[in-house]
Amino acid sequence: MNIAVSTDERTPLVKELINELNKRNHNVTYFGPKGSETVDWPVITKQAASLVPRGIVDEAIVMCWTGTGASIAANKIKGVRAALCCDAETAKGARIWNHANVLALSLNTTNNKILKKILDAWFSTPYSADNWNLKQIKHIKNMEK
Image 1 (cartoon, rainbow, N blue to C red):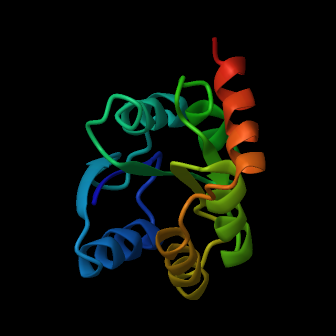
Image 2 (cartoon, rainbow, N blue to C red):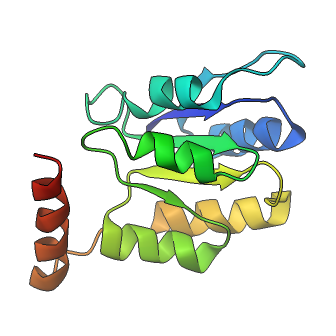
């Protein structure tokens, strides 16, 4: 799977995320600082998340200190359904019920153990295909018009 990753600052979590994605045989396109500098989170989030609806990447993972800003910025992009996930159950629900295609993470509260559990749930949970959930996603898509 091709995944865009963005962050406004480079923390140990970013390195762990990229390593974990590589271990899972995903192709990573990284947007963010290379060193200790910071970048504007709305700008860097847009660069990564906008690739999803254009079909350039399959999904994106966006990060900022709380994850909230990155999720808000990503959700401004038509076709993106970003979910801020702090645990595996939220990630699972975001996939099932919301058909989330962008994962938002907090650089501050996500540790390596939680990260792996979130990624396990995210990548192993398919979108729901039942009529009720499909109807909900249709409502969301209609809101984008």
